[in-house]
Length: 224
Ligand code: CTP
Ligand code: CA
Image 1 (cartoon, rainbow, N blue to C red):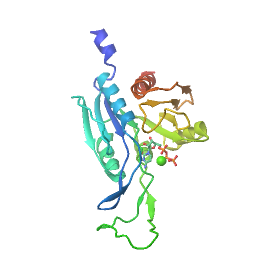
Image 2: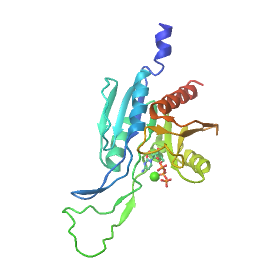
Image 3: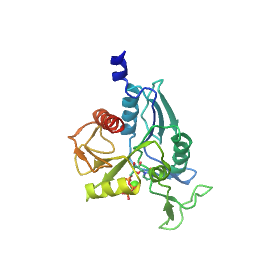
Image 4: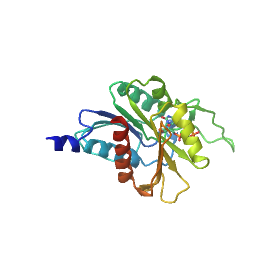
């Protein structure tokens, strides 16, 4: 029986995960979005369930699918939807991993009718969205909070800054400079930075393998 427990180290733990892009409405038929596939978040959800966790997967629009009795999928569209769903479930979570590619800005006003083609240029005014990850860092109690950082320059410095600013336990630096890493691929090249400033760099590998590395790191940290 010791053996079974060893294989299911997250049994009885609740893991909250965000995945995919968000879509911010411009009018009833248009939105601002990004190319996130949702793959990384779905792989983290599957890896967590494989370790025995009860998973709440809050995902923006994606083609990814998962059928697992341990994974509850909550589909959302916009950053505001995702923010609300995350806050509905954060209190009971033991671990929260925010891998979604959340929009940084949204249209300040959403047109109630389809915007008609008129002038040769159109200007949309955008306003900042709520930072879901930072909002959790500000209220967390016992939760182990993990964020991602997508950087193209000053990567380590920027990621460390995000870790501190958002009050995280761990940040996963995702470099878009590496070919084969990023939004549309099945592979990723990541670096973990923990709250003690320990930096661990990994080779390019499948997103499933990255998810396993991440959960191993989290287990190591919460059991330390
Ligand atoms: N994030 C979030 N809510 C937002 C924006 C980002 O929860 N409105 C989360 C992402 O899910 C990710 C982390 O914050 O875990 C970092 O996202 P990233 O885009 O790298 O950083 P930002 O803080 O948005 O800063 P910038 O895009 O300017 O680098
Ligand atoms: Ca951003």
